[in-house]
Image: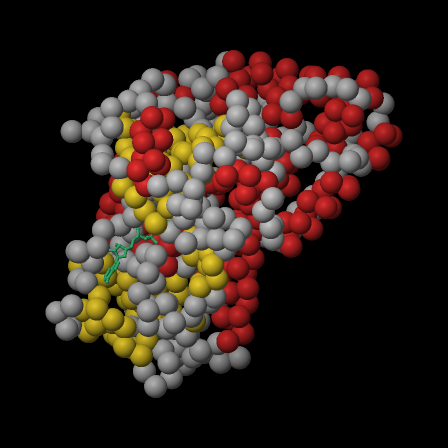
Length: 505
Ligand SMILES: Cc1cc2nc3c(=O)[nH]c(=O)nc-3n(C[C@H](O)[C@H](O)[C@H](O)COP(=O)(O)OP(=O)(O)OC[C@H]3O[C@@H](n4cnc5c(N)ncnc54)[C@H](O)[C@@H]3O)c2cc1C
């Protein structure tokens, strides 16, 4: 083995949205004590997308791994807490279900809880699965607590994430980056210059200045200034699985209690989101323009919000899919430049962090390493496909018949990977966790049962358990969750006590 002969000395990041600043924070933090320079270039002319406001639990690990104080981050980003997502009207109008972040129920005599629940359902018990969730129960009564403060109770394994103000997150990360020595340049990038080996050698700015680098990270948003416009890697369009192609977003004044969950409500041609923050609420409608116009989508959204509207409705077009290669030559694409999956499970910012973590694990030198790139691209694709399949599950299992959009969903073609999963689940009653998958079987069970997809059987090893004992364990489990939940503070009381954000000016 030899010492790296051509180490990377300069990383240039194009784009100052959440993806760009997360990349700068992660790489700047790793290289802060050595001579690898990190420079972030962002246009003063093109704004950020600014709508990534619902997250999933791994974001908190990212924040902690940077050495950022969680309370400080929450206050500065006007964040609130999130136990999961409530899905309304997805299966049929008037019906709702909850997708919690953590596990559901505890094993009984070593048997998987979901199988115990299936057995009890087969015996005629109609108790909902979510009565065993340490996140669903506090969500119902707007409670919040830190799981480590509920040690020795069934709430100790609850998992939470944050709702946050995307613009404030960018500001926070920017300050963090400047403190660790990241160079920040405000300039509009005109194009990338390619050398004879096909690598990017420089980016050229509007004023004709050039910035050289050994490695470039494209965080320029949907257009993919480097990865697509310069390197032309191509894009796999997944609209035939997920046809929504536009969103309209609007902010409103906060009304009432701060809910500790995101609401996703199915609409005539897509779904609306509601994301409660400490200082305001974020709202949006993700829709397919084949079935409704922008005008109708805006009207629907405005009819569904609570509180005074604070911003003009902003329409954002998008194409669901993934770049054919997200690491190509000396360029890595992140965030919207990498790919797009609608925010139904709040996964985009997580995909930025996860891609960055993988990149750090496979960190290259200046010599092109196709083995690394190939494995990297394979894993990123696997992550995207896993999430895509979970998103498709929300649509294809609908029972709604009330609009052309939902009738299309009922009969849609689904990915072969999802089809295989559904066949396996229906015939066995279980799912086997995959390697490094984000969504564990409990997440799938939450959506499957929420969408009323029940398997044909449960795992018959459960029959070895005495059914009365099984029932009494399940009853005690739910009672103890409920008793512990009633002792917890309301979400708003918790926010006030633990991490009150400053009142906006
Ligand atoms: C409708 C919608 C809702 C979403 N909701 C969620 C959610 O709830 N949760 C979640 O995790 N994610 C969500 N996302 C995704 C999330 O918003 C993005 O993943 C995240 O904000 C990262 O965006 P970005 O940094 O890649 O791009 P952007 O925010 O678009 O930033 C692009 C940057 O590139 C710069 N730039 C562009 N062109 C040039 C140029 N020529 N020269 C120099 N700089 C340039 C811009 O100035 C800007 O700084 C949502 C996305 C959409 C569209």
